[in-house]
Image (cartoon, rainbow, N blue to C red; front, side, top):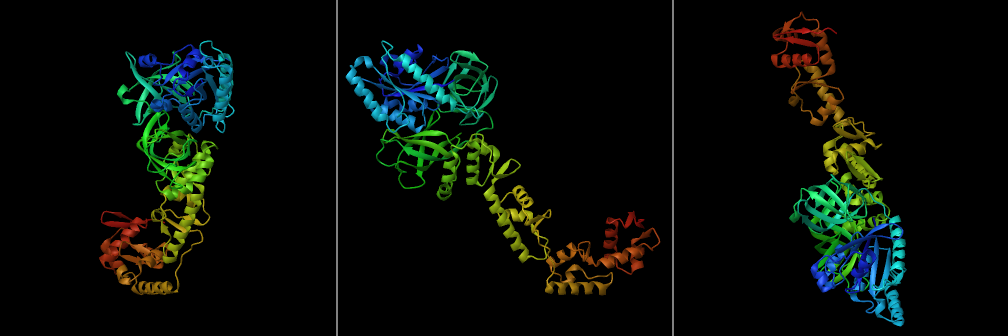
Length: 600
């Protein structure tokens, strides 16, 4: 259901025109009717000549109510810009046009109102003046329709052009299934509870659905839905609607809050944005200004920090720091007001809803983010991931509008940018080779140490090793695929010395500490099965253990420790560890104080 929003200077006939087109007075407040001045947002609806049902959002034109005006433009499909023929182009005509231009509202019709108050010559001049001001904007080619409320002159032509504009806007609408509604009104109905209104975008909702309210991550349930005074079971995207919500008190919600499906939003209080100044802004924007961000139906004071230059004239990137965390998607459009100038000074699009605060990193990310904005959600997800290196898939989807990266390594719900994966793999290979060079006797670097050293999650490290031809995963350790280890000449000499000591000692070998063996050499010899460890203090040559086993098999069984000790001429400090090793390896079986030799 398309939404048409009005725009224009105060008292140029916006509300009167809406009432003439719809038969409904959009002014809701007694004060508005008494003063003949729209103060807050007004709403109406009608069916266009082609059968399309549309909603109208009527906005205030007075400069004092620009905040209310901006709250009504967040989800309009078509703009109805109104300029009075008897006053011509005025300050709020220019400011409202700037808002539409900065928000990217490209479909619209211009109504030149109050034509009954001027003659033909003045009307012609008024139309020429409007055309001049529209030149160079998104409305340069918009149709200009003269109308007069008392006689309804021009209304038929205006409706026909609205049909064309609505049709063009509708063909560009691509809902992404991630429903959200920026709230522009909240009130209580006796017997029903809290009701909110707004324009649903990007997805559908049904009665009974659970939603999250932001800021605050408050869960609510849709108790009832209504659109154009009709009770509904479900509401489609681009529809103005009212929601009766359970689990929500009136004081917990306000204009600027947002409703969305649970788990689909990741709020942030820092935004990277592209800003374009309004064409009437002469002085550049600087970090010293006092700014308000208008996004969705909300308004927040923000601190602006320019990224590319010290001043911004025309366009440039900036970081906006908010006082609260709000759910934003890359590509969301916004308006920037400066309170000192008391006017809209710029607007643009969100590039990254959760950027790095570091200016250098931000600068490097700009070109990729800018290029991705109009390429779809997956491209945005790839660009965001390229900036962040690694990220949760759910968070990427929340910040990209449902995108999933296409150029990434994905492990257990997390993604790593492909380029970063290549760089991380290269760092891993370098770290492993360095370790092997310094520790040639070890089987490889401990996997956990490698992950910590190159600052990567263990799950990602294992995935990178699995896809690399240069690395080998040995379980707890990582080595290069071509690493065989081995002893150099000096270590071979040390090994020969150890082997000689063991051979000469028979079964009463020296303790490990008495061998003066380097720990790395000890581990290498054990790994290569050149020696066999018997308990914490003893090692033997494999041939010594084989001979021991063969001689044990010749003993009468069962036998005691003492009998074993006497048979081999060993002390108890050797006999007990040797018997316990043979028990553990299935050579002997203990039964109380005696042992038997197991059959082969």
